[in-house]
View 1 (tube, helix red, strand yellow):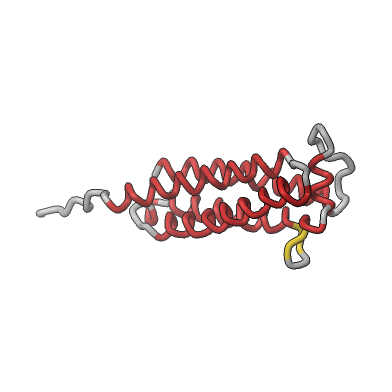
View 2 (view 1 turned 180 degrees about the horizontal axis):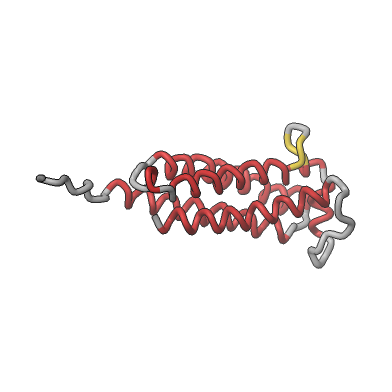
Length: 149
């Protein structure tokens, strides 16, 4: 279950980053700490929204979902079940694909880098790898002991 603990911690960090970027995007905070202005360039580009919704809000939803799945999988009745890890694989896999697309846009189209976005892409990738390792481990887990008595 270590993979679920790691996924929960990383998803929490990703959620906090997404909330921070979303609060800036909606004007709730005034300064975006990024260093070189790349974050503002990326956030204010036409690619800062997806389907009319800020990308940071999509991140909040994805990281919130991954956090919920990881925490669910840590509950005693779900610890030996594969469904929470499968959910982590699906959501984080979609996150990796979307992050790869956004990273491509930063490099090839926007020509600016948002450090927070790069960290988010790394986080979701590590969550995916962690879930993959956990999935493989669950497939080889020994069956629960049956009492003879």
